[in-house]
Length: 160
Image (cartoon, rainbow, N blue to C red):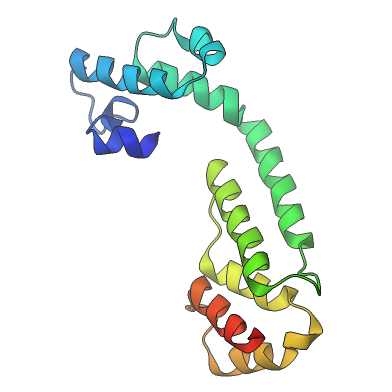
């Protein structure tokens, strides 16, 4: 939704850059775009809000929860991420997909997972049959700057 509003030049109605006057026409367009994306039951709950910013805030609180709840969800997600390990039956592609899923979930909670963390998690979580390639990658590459996709590619090449 943020991308759609930004592409239409309307994201400033949600997160104003300046304290300028509210352009009522842009506010109405932003509100209409948000309404189009909502199911009817949720739409009826936020329709009382007149500004796009107020609607967005109501949705944010509803779906992300209060800051305390959001922090608790993030802590739970971190624990789940730390415990994740690649199974012997998983392919590199499958496990990389799981890690990418965590990136999306972190983002939805307002946090990020850096490539460095993902690369280290990937290399630390693979089964013993990958030990040789992992040792080689760790010895000859800078893991702090290696893109996640590059680590996936190297492991996939070894897997094949």
